[in-house]
Length: 120
Image (tube, rainbow, N blue to C red; front, top):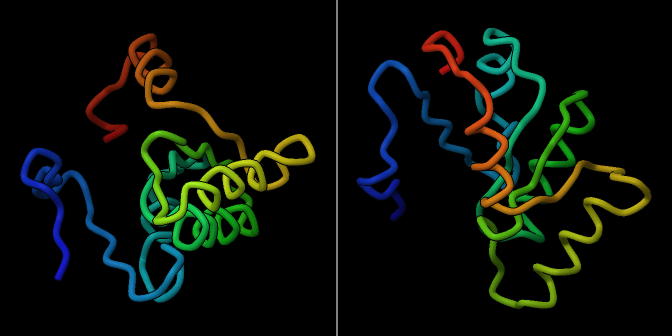
């Protein structure tokens, strides 16, 4: 009952799809294998819901040594308070699980970086 919207569908053979069966993206998936093979150590995390799937993925990633950056305006919850508190929990205590930013800041940062096709 879910799919990726056509405008964001991955490029065939270049962008893997990780279809997670649980709340976190690492449980019972090949995500960690993909990240290790590409030497990726920093993750941009977004999705729904902030307090469940996003939080679980960030915690799983943090336990594995990844640095997580949660894109606040690319996450959501059914309950606004849960969304805001969930984001605060991630960045609490100096970023105990990761950091939080906005999509504008991500676009700004990525536009100043030269990406080669080998990084995709």
